[in-house]
Image (cartoon, rainbow, N blue to C red):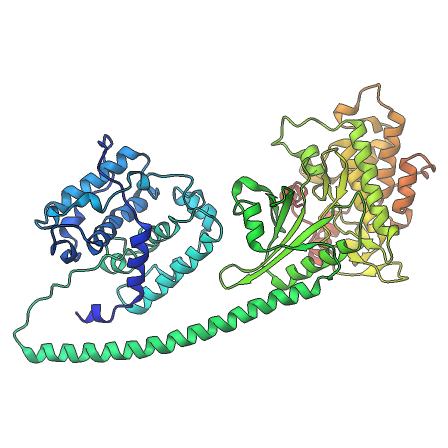
Length: 624
């Protein structure tokens, strides 16, 4: 009696929610599959059957009690099989039938109209349409994550009020988060309850405290009678005092929580306002609401996922006006750093308009207590993906190799885009992250340079900048990686690497005999040996192709990717060399590749040099 008088009122909210969320299978169809659940617990479990034994027909309270009792078996099934529900309709019918058979041992319960409480046959059958497509524990971990607030709040003894309240609040928070990710979220709360009781709680779903708190199974109120009225009066007095104390504490805690939530909401709103204020008002891009992006991407579904990397993930979406877009959700481990990149990209792109630079269509910034601070960038969708997809993506085996004409066009497009950044606007803009995954291809296979999150605008009249090193290993110019000295020729170096990748079909870094070889070093060796034809990708070794023009492109790539900055051309000069308007200077020998000691020093000073396996992964990452 004392425990029930002090039980946290949140449990009754659980009962209310479960009443609406748990709808069970009917017995109208014959069941041919055996049930994997042992319902013997129904006969021995100390559940309160009073709501089902006081009337000849099932009341709402009785149905809630029966459904919650059934959920113990479901949680145990999840713990044992790792499946939330049953594989087919026959198994579902069989389990409900077995459950009814065990209830028949309770004389008065068997008199009620059982089928009125179980009226939806298909509810228990696993379906990919339920709650983010979750069917089993692996799906849960994939969609929800390996750890949530449930893990720390619902794993212990939940018989007392405070632990139960904490578990309840963690469940509501997770349900709110999942509900924002999918329109069909009616089963999400059911899944949360089953997962908390069957997987997380160490005592298991048949523990009275777990079943009472998480699954809403009310325990029997029957207590041994006492002939001593004095003891009974003491218990009543203590119970009354505790009820009063808990009521007062509940009011105080409720007010504090309301006040904290109000302050937190104000902080979140202020955070979004500050970010929006930092973005130039004349950027020409639209501020999207998170609801608009949610609809466009179908709840950021996995089917619409088109790329991911260290920056975050990219989804394909369709706006209400029919425009197809790419929505980049930025990672928010370091909110301040992400906001800097977010605002920087917005400001940079607001200043540029060029056919070979990917325009930004809009932004979105959200901030709340559940999801934290989230930032989104919206671009026009490029139907042919990235240059990386066409050069190296082994998953697209049926993708046609790029023709010489296409490769030439892509190289010139990138050069024109960079030339605009360096010379078309003042002060110049240095991209700092030119690589295959940041070059996108439209429906006509025209190249657009994308991702300006790391771009820097040079100071007026300055020939170079000294700044924090950023970029992707292999594409970063040596003087920039070693000394942080950024110039327009830092982008030229990356461009040279891109030219060599396009012409050879080889990655910027490849492992050869246990060591990582830079593509520029390899191509230079081929040029010195007079074997430049071996640099060409195999599909371009046809004798009918203009080898002299192709050789010129290789040499321009080598010149741009020279380790000595003074020997590199500007991007405008490189463009003229590619088009044959000016001659290519004699190639000066490259210094030998960095030795192991230099590599070690380089790694510790800049964190850009990786092990051979890491470098291989880095060079092939789909960082858009």
